[in-house]
Each structure stands twice: as structure tokens, then as C-alpha cells.
Amino acid sequence: MKDLASPRSLQDYPKHTSAQIRYFDLDRQGHVNNSVFATFSEIARVDLFYDPENPLAPEGTSFVVARLLIDFHEELFWPGDVEIGTGVLRIGRSSFTLLQGMFSNDRLVATAEAVIVMVDGHTRRSTPLPPQTRDILQGLQLADAARE
Image 1: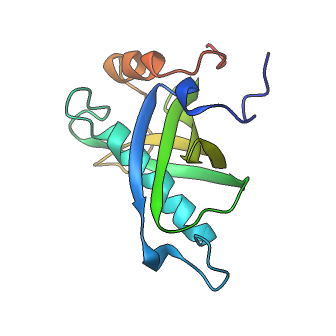
Image 2: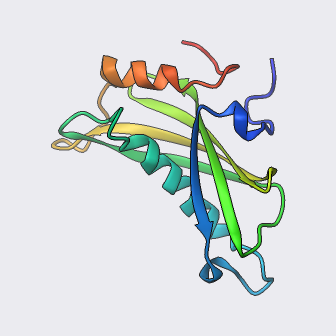
């Protein structure tokens, strides 16, 4: 089996999101600042979580990021766009792990792995993923992701 965090092509990810690179995103070296990659990751997560066709969080719940790991592969420059591929690596009882690839001109520039926990809006504690959420997440699993 392929290393789950190994580089992939954009087509390997079930969900695709685009973001425009802003001049504001640059640092003193003239490339996109490392902190902006967390924003790109968030843009794609929000696109996934709040998709009106397949909302993931039932009423009274939300998601929190418990862990975010970003690996930088190449520099990213302005002007341009970044394409973010998102797929599910693992699904647990109350959490799931996403893998995201960030691409510019078909070049992989960064990967991000995020552990997401579903929380109850009232108790602010983790809560089990409901069957409908699990079904949507299973449909977004990467081809070689761990099955539970």
C-alpha cells in the first residue's frame, strides 16, 4: 500500500476547491507565506463541511481541528490560483482525518493532514459521528485509505 501521506495528483482527491493567491499572501522572500497554507486548507475544509448538497454536521454540532500538519514541497508565487484536493484518510468514532494536496499549475506545493473532531454544541465535548455523516465521509475516502 502507498504511504498515505505521500504525494498524489489532484485527480486522486474526491473533492476539489480553488483559491486565488493574493498579493497580500506574500512574505519578504516573495513567495506565499507558510501561514497562508493553513488558510488554503481551511478554505477547502469549509467547502467540504458546509456543502449545501451534503452537509456534514447535523443541527447542534460542529467541527474543530484537533491537529493540522502541513508539509511544504515547493514555493508558491503570486499571481495565480491554488487547487486544493481533499480526501478522507480515516474515520473514527467521533473524528476523521483529512488529507489535502495543494497544487499550482499541476505542481504539488504542499500537503496537509488534519484531524477533525465533531463536537456537541451544548456540551462542547466530542460526540459520535452520525450515520449520515459517516456515509458522506466514506464516499470521500481516498482509494487507498484505511477502512474501519
